[in-house]
Image 1 (tube, rainbow, N blue to C red):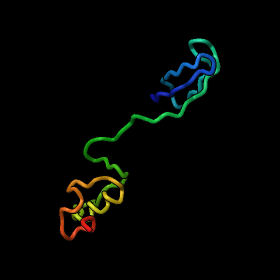
Image 2: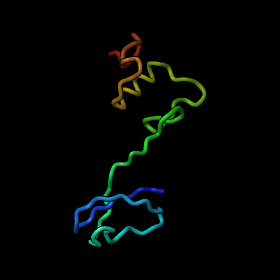
Image 3: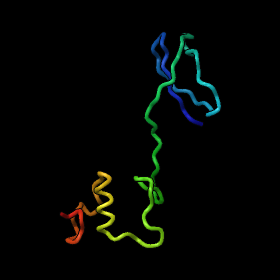
Image 4: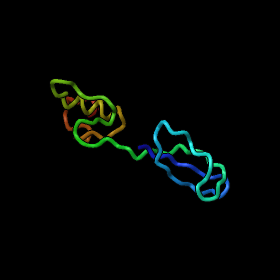
Length: 95
């Protein structure tokens, strides 16, 4: 069940509530009864482990990508490649 964050306009308390997606937003603060507004906060949800990719796309389906292709794609995404960026003399990331 998702966790939603609210802020009270009266007592300025920020609190979290577990609600179903289909539930309507809260309108009153459980502490003072003041009007609340739903906050947009950063999620702590992360995909970890094998099978998940940082960029949302997988590599080649049946064969592994050449190391220089992998390094180039990783550098384009702004991430330090596993080889450090330039371990292969023929790698485009080495130039």
